[in-house]
Length: 261
Image (cartoon, rainbow, N blue to C red; front, side, top):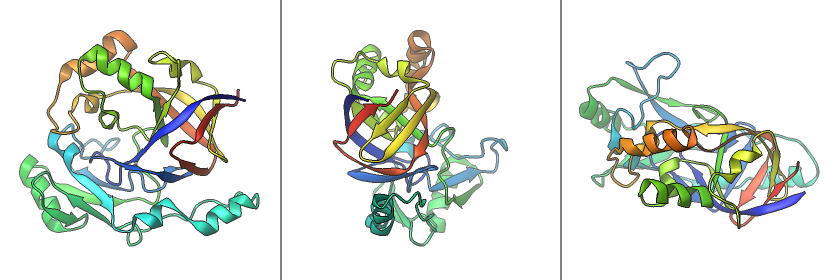
């Protein structure tokens, strides 16, 4: 077992495609970070395999900020963690839409409950789309339940693309600092296993093939098509990693990231 750095940032997105929030710790289940992509709007005009309303349709949507009304409920579960400490493999309790109530702050400063019809009406008026709200007990990620990246890759690609080194642009769950590593060094970890903190184990499944979302400035929603083109031309369109959860656990900022094989 080799230590390859420390966990720098934990980020989850209470509402799919809205701005994420940095949290000090997270419960990580087989379906991903508890609370990550728990809510989403769907677009009636979207294809059946991808019904989601995202920043691809409305760039400033990525600047809407969602937060849980009771964040403590989503960050810690003492009974669960005690069971894990005893060696039990019990899974985290799945959330419900009441316990995981969310409020959304719009770029104009208005605050809505996630299910307030005025929020949906605002988004529909801005796009001409017909939207519906969805809640899921398991996260509505595009692909794998966990995404992760090194700080070195964030900084290195920002320098290449002449953009700010803002990790929020990439919408990753876990960012770790790997001292001495070159940008994109984590690509060599595909097929290997990582441990983070006292219990969590991940299988690194594949590189994260990026889409137009990374071209959106997280502060303004303004698009920059050259960002994705640069990534495609120089890094095969990949930035970061996708992982599957082998053993559930809790992660905390500053946890060691260890290579198991």
